[in-house]
Length: 291
Image (cartoon, rainbow, N blue to C red):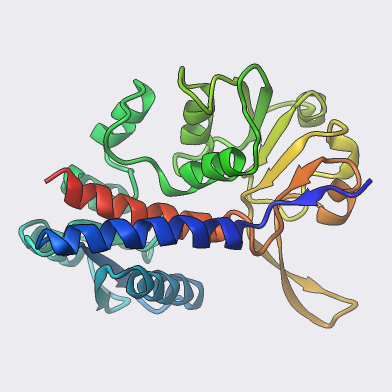
C-alpha cells in the first residue's frame, strides 16, 4: 500500500493564515511586524529563497526590508549592516541568507545579530533556550516545521523511536532536541546518525519516525525503512535526470521506493520547504510579541 503524502504546502497555508491573524491583531494594537532579509551576492538559489520569503511576508502582512549587498562585501561590511538593523526599532527580525560568499565569516555574522531579532534561532542564547526546553522564544524554522507537520498529520512522537540522519546545527541537532523534549507532541526516543556512523541502515530500519537531513540525493532507499514508518525528507538536491534531459529536485529519500514502505511521507518539493518559511514568519511575530 502506497504511503499517504503529507502536504506541506497545505499545512503551511494553514499556519500562515494563523500568522496573518496574529499580524492583524498586532496591527490593531498599533504594532507592525518588520523583518529584514540580508542577501550578500547574487547566488541564484539564494535569490529564489529570498524572493519567496519576501513574498510570504507580504501575504501575511509582515513588512519586509530587503538589503542586497555586493558579492565582494567583507565581513566588516555585513557587520555594519547588522549593527544598523539591530538599532532599527522597525525591524523585529533579522535574517542573513545562508550561505554568504566565502570571504564573509558567517559565524561572526550570526553572533552579531541581536538574539531578540534572531528569527533563524542560530544565536547561542536561543540555541541554549531550545536545549533546556524553554517554551517561550524562537524555535529553529525547519525543525519547528517538521514538528508541526507531524502534529498536524496526527503523528504523536511519544514513545516512538525517531531517527535523525544528519547532525547540522541548522537541522540535525535542533531536530533531535525538539523530538526528545519532555512536552506534548514530543517525548520520542531519539537516535542521531551521520556521515561517521557505520551501517546507518541498521538504525533507520528501527525508526518509527525517520527524518532525513544528510544532504545526499536519494540516500535513503526503500530497504532502509521500517514498514509503516513516518518519513520526513528535509533534503533538497538538484540532480540531472538523464531520461528527462534536464535537472530536477529530489530529496534525501528515494521517494518512489520509500512510498511503498512508509505509512506517511513528505514529498520534495512541497513538503518541508514551505514549512520552513512558515516558521520564519511565526518567529517574526514572536520577536514583536516579546518586545
